[in-house]
Length: 102
Image 1: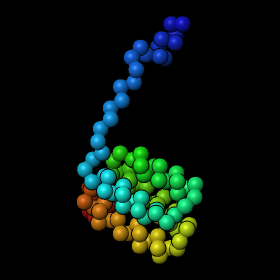
Image 2 (image 1 turned 90 degrees about the vertical axis):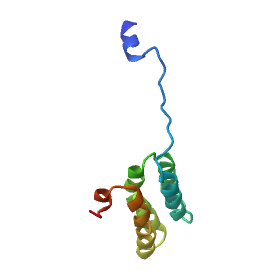
Image 3 (image 1 turned 30 degrees about the horizontal axis):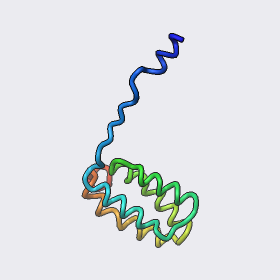
Image 4 (image 1 turned 90 degrees about the horizontal axis):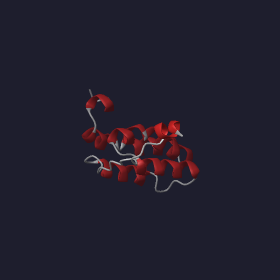
């Protein structure tokens, strides 16, 4: 029984809920708007990941998946237009070294 006490601490998990960083909600809404006319399981999973992202960096890393979903349901040009339209907004949230503006 003693070994279980080491694995199960007496105090419950202390969840530290904090509001998202400035600008993250607006960026999240823009990414979700890109997926408005996309459907399917992959799109639903991606929407869930977008909703659960807490930082701008997480949203930045999901761009490729947004591109892939749009590409699968539309065309290459449409995917490029939608994702490239986000670069200016990401440029305001992220350091230049992450967005390739350095």
